[in-house]
Length: 528
Image (cartoon, rainbow, N blue to C red; front, side, top):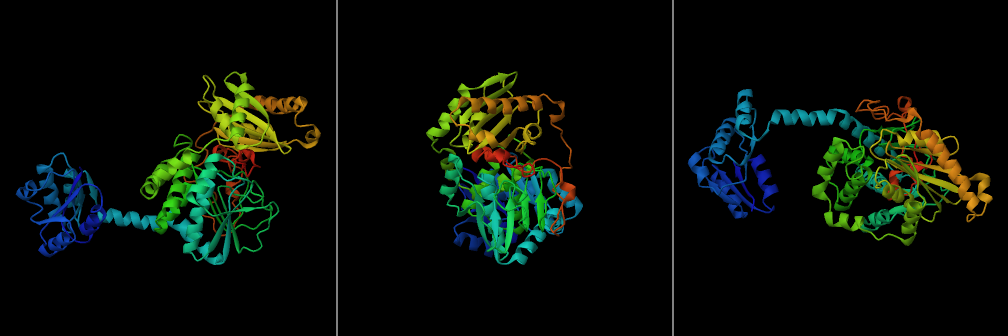
């Protein structure tokens, strides 16, 4: 059983005791303040009166695994930390430097403690957090939300994935604190089994909009996980937008009163966690679970385009999330249609060096394409997969890559951008191509599949062989996020032409439709 010892009383020690008292393990306190010790005992805490700097006193305590030195006096903390290290050399020692410590006292504590809390550094860090980029972004976002005041429509991309849904739910929570009522809206369908389980288990309240729906009843519009109206979201292209928060690099200027585009992180959910933390909002179990799952999905369990900030956001969410709920979401049943599509992809595969292409014919579930592309990538010596099929007069394409320097997003844009929409990440992308006059051919006619194979395979293989689609790293500074803090309604010309804005379809991919795959390049959009 874990044993913890707190030395001292006062505001900091009291906060530590309050946090630790209900945790599993033994907690004890040693302090010189008899009244404080008496109060702690009445509250059920094992507290003793004693000198925390005395070796003899410490030896009478049950051997602790962790010791927190938390008096207000810097000199006492130095002496106590030294005594603790002498008596309990293997214990983890967390020491507070005390109020207004000298440099020598901080150095003395650092010499014996495993972790030191210096109030000067902590204060400076907090101030920087408030006046730095995070604080400025948050103030601009809240200013726009307060100005909207009435009802806000938070619109995800079509066929939303967990990252888009969780980000929208978190933004709705933030809008509520600004006195702005929000609805979470989406076009298309939620067909992937994990996405359906995600919404149902967490009981998120989403509004499915019909094609052509206008938002005249709303006082403001926000886009999450994509950045341009009319590109993979069912809105009119000229819809005025108030807020955009996305982690996909934009290909064209993004117009909104507030824009936060930071492509260095692996998920839009990570950006929303930043706002929650800066605002001091503790997420509910449902919101925390949703955001954590959104990060895990979009980073492919922290293996794809992951950033240290994704780990930091996850660490913040874990104590508030429900692991049991995550298990229920991640183990949904697979439909017979999805299984059949994966089987056709395996059966129809064609090998081209380290690439594997497969046409599955008619599709009933577009999400199955992404799952098929993932499965084929598990084959030995395969580094790139592309799976495509036909549904409602459109060819849908889903691609994956691993262990190669090929940039799939750029490759698909080059292959299909002139005849459809395409884009995505370097290792995950998608495309959509209208059949046009070919749609008149019977869906079961093998000649249609042959024509589709010729269009997709030839174009992709030609583009894949181009040297111009290799991954280029460090093109933008790590802190690039559109125009920076644009919340003033100015066009983000600086962000134009960076890449695809939304995976173009792929990460929705895995958990949503690959239609995002290319959805229509939302600046790349379709996306992921």
